[in-house]
Length: 259
DNA sequence: AGCGATGTTCGCCG
DNA sequence: TCGGCGAACATCGC
Image 1: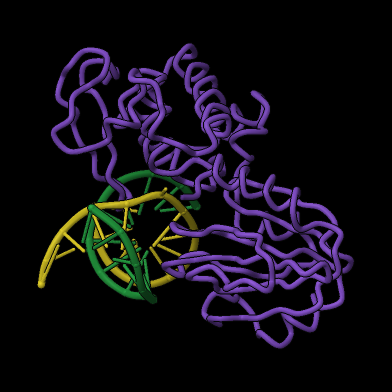
Image 2: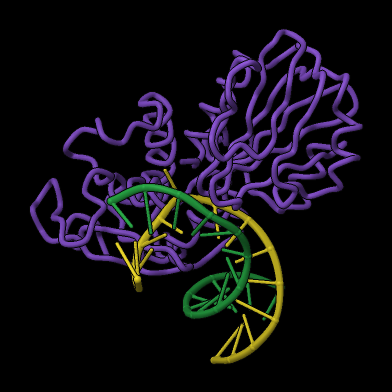
């Protein structure tokens, strides 16, 4: 379930389980998940240790001696650290086996994610044209991103070249909390609205991390628990409308979110 | 049993 | 050149 908050949680999980142990073997269960030759992938990593991690948007970079492992989780990725003597998790696509008897599984049900290697993290980010990380960006970086782009807010939030990390669900929540219609054009926003959007991007992502991605326990005044057809706004009771754009389906309240 | 899904990418069009 | 749009990718769960 990976948008920025979930990937941040994967990062913390990785940090607490998989750093500084020697990788003794790697098993690739489905080569389609790799952006590169499996043999080269194995050769470069076996015998190394993962040293540190860094997240940019929905991308997780894991440093080892001579480069970075890059993981993207697509729509259904996950990590699971398990005892090597036990059965590996369902839908495991790559298994990193460590010298302490444990393994880390990179799981992907629908193969929309991928694993890759790069020697230069910054170059990788530049090549992908990723905008600033939505959680870590400064107000200044945000304003620069805003100045570079136009278009409707929903599309912009989903566009990783604008800012990196926001996905479909959190974009709905951000716009709801900022009281802005997803159809508003960035160029038409007044200063207060631009600031409100910044504030809510930060707040919603921060809260998502705090809740550990558990949407079932969100407070009633959030949009997330109501993101379903025919549901009504938790604030005013108006029937939520759907917006279909960029091939994604969003929800919003036509009364609370200013057109 | 068909449809929808927390993502990215690419080609087409205006 | 940029933004919007739709399809493609693969597969599972409801």
